[in-house]
Amino acid sequence: MKIIVIGKSGQLAWELSQFVSTEHEVVCLGRNDIDLQNFVAMTECLKHQKVEGVINASAYTLVDKAQSDIDNAYALNSEAVGNLAQACKSLFVPFVHISTDFVFHGDKGVPYLPDDKIQPLGVYGASKAEGEKLITNTYSERSCIIRTSWVYSTHGNNFVKTMLNLMRTKPEISVISDQIGTPTYAKGLAEASVASLINNVSGIHHYTDTGVASWYDFAVAIQRIGLELGLLDKIIPIKPITTEQYPTPAQRPHYSVLDKCSFVRALPEFSFNHWQTQLHMMMKSLKTELS
Ligand SMILES: NC(=O)c1ccc[n+]([C@@H]2O[C@H](COP(=O)([O-])OP(=O)(O)OC[C@H]3O[C@@H](n4cnc5c(N)ncnc54)[C@H](OP(=O)(O)O)[C@@H]3O)[C@@H](O)[C@H]2O)c1
Image 1 (cartoon, rainbow, N blue to C red):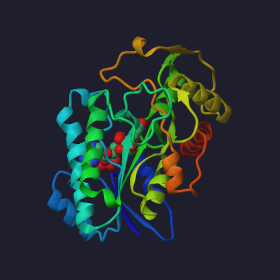
Image 2: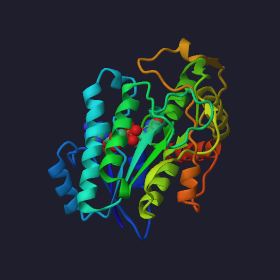
Image 3: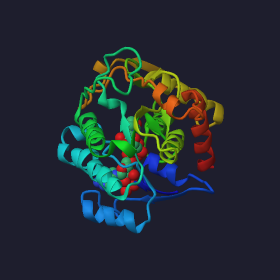
């Protein structure tokens, strides 16, 4: 299958660009290669590429900036997604789109199911929810929406790399301990996206690594593994703080663990790993890339 990935330099897009297979070809298109706001040009571009399946790894992901940059967030997370779904429909190719735990409010207290009530707390979540709706209304028969959370990779900016930098340069750090979710290595998410595409999975599903953590737990694990692998050479105190002590423009869900059962039912052969196992793998790759 010739798979077109929308996005090139992002965390997920980069992991998809590393995907190696004898049966499938992956071609990543960045913002200079395809115009997501122009339906006709986009469809022509995909046709010209002889596309057989599309994975959308592009998104407006600046959660706080989205609060004041509403039009641009909606342009990429909703309108462009609707265009892509329409283009895939006109070419009758399967479409995989990535969405977010931020479509939920965060007050449920047990893992969110794919059909639980959508109640985003900010513009980013609302724009992603609107994108989901456009796909479902346009091309539900061959579209798969994968909601995920707390994504990191060796490539791009993310919590793991930020923490490592702070742990190297600060005498102590404070990290939020009352937001609960699941960290997810983009490499596994890339594999889940490809598996969903080539197996024609449709509907809304959740994919994250397994287990549950607060941002504080995540930071503690980064420090432990960083010391073990020699990415850090000293221990600094990590102080747990509340969301109230670290105000941000966008409100985030307090609890956004995603129930993955429907993904398991759709792809029973697919294997999941615990987030700490995946974190260890990512940090080992980071060490290799740095040396
Ligand atoms: N990061 C997280 O913690 C997280 C959590 C839950 C869900 N997600 C979802 O997971 C998916 C992948 O996220 P990620 O972390 O890989 O995102 P990312 O690293 O921020 O990458 C964003 C991608 O979007 C593309 N993009 C940005 N602005 C664009 C524009 N104006 N026109 C065209 N393309 C544009 C970039 O394209 P170029 O390659 O051309 O630069 C890049 O490939 C997204 O759908 C995101 O909503 C992420």
